[in-house]
Length: 155
Ligand SMILES: [Fe+2]
Ligand SMILES: [Fe+2]
Image (cartoon, rainbow, N blue to C red; front, side):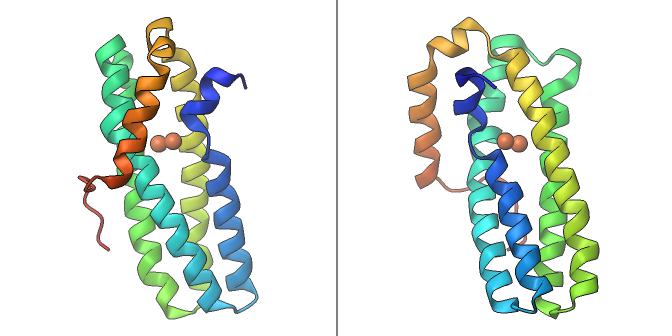
């Protein structure tokens, strides 16, 4: 992957690692640790999605329109991920590993698929004009850190 896409999707791999770590902790019966890892994962993911929902997706639509509904599909995948994360946030409280596995596995799979899909779309859509706005876009992404989340999370 080249530098172009890197600054757009920099922490996708980290979410994979975080879910693996959370699953390992739960497997060892370290529920307190598993819950802490899950909370950190959710905090990071909320910000990541907000950056995409409110900065990157509108930017791509503004530049290229939404050919074949590509951005809309990504946005729907976010809705599905939020639903799975919300489910897991209840299930993790039960300290029941089998139940937990049934919930984290679909989340992990859906997240991997979404990230791969998104990287392809971004790579496709990152035209010269977007690359030239790189510094401005990075500023706008950073500004999301202090902004209220618009998306509805159950927790
Ligand atoms: Fe992403
Ligand atoms: Fe995304």
